[in-house]
Image (cartoon, rainbow, N blue to C red; front, side, top):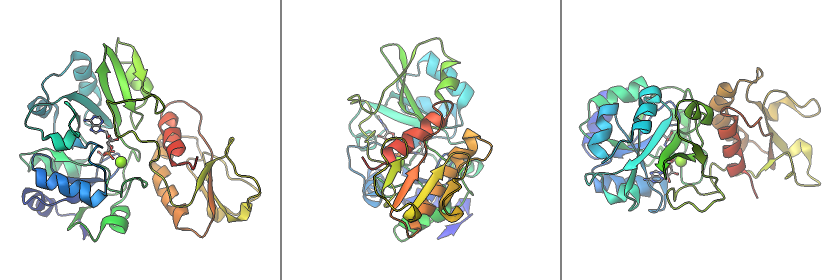
Length: 316
Ligand code: TXA
Ligand code: MG
């Protein structure tokens, strides 16, 4: 059931249930992070392998130290600037966070969602919420309550509706390794915003580098069922262009039907493009087409994170 009842949502969570919650990035599949049975349910509902850890969501910066041993100054500074917001910090965990949440890692991923409804919800709870994106493992993340209902509606008692997500792609995950700010997942907060506000070097851990600190950064992710190709080099030969759907940054293609073209932002606004990306992919995935052909954006601002999602969605 989809609804707006924050009290009901809180009651269910206190009872140990798993529900859908809105955030500014994508919808989450949330439960009490301190209750191992609930955490197991999250993995089960999402069909997520246990080696892929969960992010915990807290209501304010002061909560972070309840669950993490250390809070390095530079991360604290970034937290003061960008939390609540699309930023997740990887911090050494305290023992109160079950190993199940972190897949055995000594580090826990923590964020504060910038969403009124979910902040009000967190105020009513005495525990943090573990919440992966509310999609079956490997599929596109949901950016509306209806997206969650479409795939997980029969597995969870409630989806708290907070409207369409304002950021539309997942949070940027960062930590510190050997004194450098390290980006483990490109996301809704741009690399430039991070770099401009720290003295340390910022290192991006590429998806191709082996990366034990972020076991969940699997390559095949965010993928629609219809095979998706990037139009630069990977366009298959001999395909019927009328049987294709298109994801375009700014401009429509003149020679194919309008109905199968998703324009992310006519004005070339990266934020608007991010907001529309996953909903556009889902829309095309429902159509009677054989391929999706996606255009990459310029590699700047959060165009970088959007391209990361498109590459992961692509059929190799
Ligand atoms: O924007 C977001 O971050 C959304 C909303 C719902 O908050 N959540 C989200 O969660 O994207 P999920 O589970 O779909 O992606 C979290 C990623 C995974 O790739 C996981 O491997 C990584 O974060 N992660 C979580 N905890 C980690 C940890 N302790 N160490 C390394 N990576 C971790
Ligand atoms: Mg996810």
